[in-house]
Image (cartoon, rainbow, N blue to C red; front, top):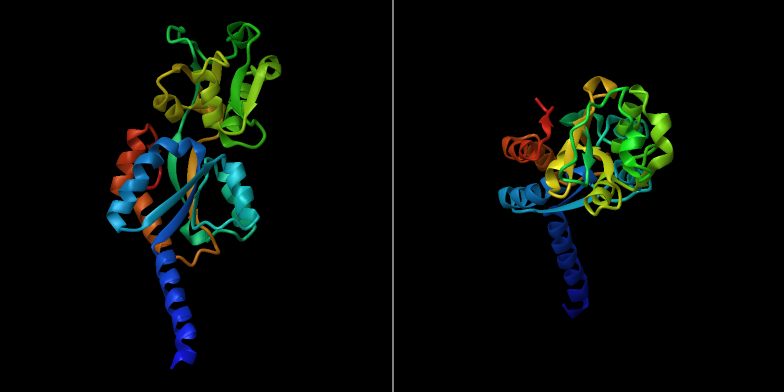
Length: 254
């Protein structure tokens, strides 16, 4: 009997490990979702009794981590492009993909008394900056930076302001530069601006100046977690919708 005890203990510990893993689900989410996730994480845990692990970063960084085999169950990207790439790579379950949220791009100022501006071809943005930097997320990789650059290009403002752009790893880092006064102006999502009391929105980019800002969600192809479906359902449900809309996102999941 003693001969089999280590073997039986090994089976018991393995079963416990599998049970614990089944009670945990991992979500990779765009950095611009941070404030909403601060509310959504405990709401999901209360509703399901499971642990939700949220990893926040720029969508490009998260997509690359997924490409390199990072363990996750669900991904929310801040633009369709990175989700398209993961789908082309066979790294998501296409049948689970849906557009979840929408957003706007805005120009924010550190000065609480900054006057509103009209974001059009007549705006002298370099003059507003006065030689100081314009904070943006990475304009070739991070969705907020890509949307912002596209909007500035479509308005004919990019060439004059490009030398003044200070690029940050993600949109929350760009927002922090403005909130801390390191940059007088920045281009961020409307929802980021709403979450930061130390910035003032002075203009909203016209919707026609950039592609629609959509946040797709999907399960990862390697996820065998039984909680993955529960998380996807929760993200598209009424409680999550109230949280997202409370942070200024528009709802695209209907």
